[in-house]
Image (cartoon, rainbow, N blue to C red; front, top):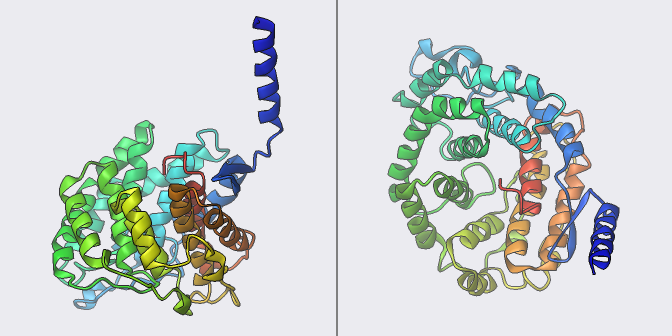
Amino acid sequence: MKVRSLQCVVLLLTILGCQDTNKKIVANVEVPVLEIGKAEYLYHFAFDCIDKEYPNKLGQTLGDSTYLATPSALHPAFYGCFDWHSSVHGHWTLVNLLRLYPNLEHFDAILKKLKANITAENIAVELDYFNDEHNKNYERTYGWVWLFKLDEALGHWEHPRAKDMSQNLQALIDTLERNLIDFLPKLTYPIRVGTHSNTAFALSFALDYARSQNRSELETILLKRAKEYYLLDVNCPITWEPGGFDFFSPCLQEASLMAKVLTKNEFLHWITQFMPGLLSSPEKLMQPAEVTDRSDGQLAHMDGLNFSRAWCLYEIGTLLENQSLIQLANDHFTVSYEQMGSGEYAGEHWLASFALYTLIKGNYAIDG
């Protein structure tokens, strides 16, 4: 009996050892695996830009001539990667890669850059910027929720420096959290665009953060506003998508949010009214977007759209165990992942974050 049991174990290990380590099964469909090779590939996009000061798009409001300063003077923590929010999610990318792969070849060099940027002194300057009367709404809400994601990732990372960096961020996190809590009751109508100010995206990321960090006041208002904004929505015009510069799907971002807000049965009823045909024939509603010029920052958004669509499809497909959604997510991911190294900074300064987040969602067992 013991011999037979041992033979079964050996057979199982042999079968597992023969599986393609670049694939994982979700809802009976193979998905790309987030493995060390991809981590070694993705890290350099963020690593190369978090201290690359120029070119830079500040997006600031000038109170007077004294506001004219270099990006690193205005934002000593998050001055790289072309703009503030891209720098923030570049830091998120690096934190997650170190968290998931402590044997990453360039671990020490990456950690050194993170520690140099996320200091108490640098965050104090960042906080002063957001407290300025002319820039209180700076990066609302896209940059705010990516900062929440960064803090969430630091909270999941069991490394001595992670706690230090999270503590350094805390004053800025608290301020932006309070700003969001104060802002949402005043936002009568959700913003349904395919770019930075999309409300469903902000609520979705903020809800992840609130639940992860036990921020009950924030979670309460997020759930309330999500239902008020979206619960009665039907027949989302998915055929109008994408817009020419979109990097979000307004329909799928809303669906992704509601999958987190509603119970599984409630969501199943809601999604059949909101996006008829999505669960049965999603490929008839959307196909991967085409990118015609990756040197054009606006047109390069289409790669981001493919990734963000994919992560929403992974979330919904995993929840509902829907093979068609998982396969369509794969198709979207593959098209843009294969073009990541285009050499064009217009996309390379931010797309690694979207690619990594998509891989985490596809590999749902990894806590992202």
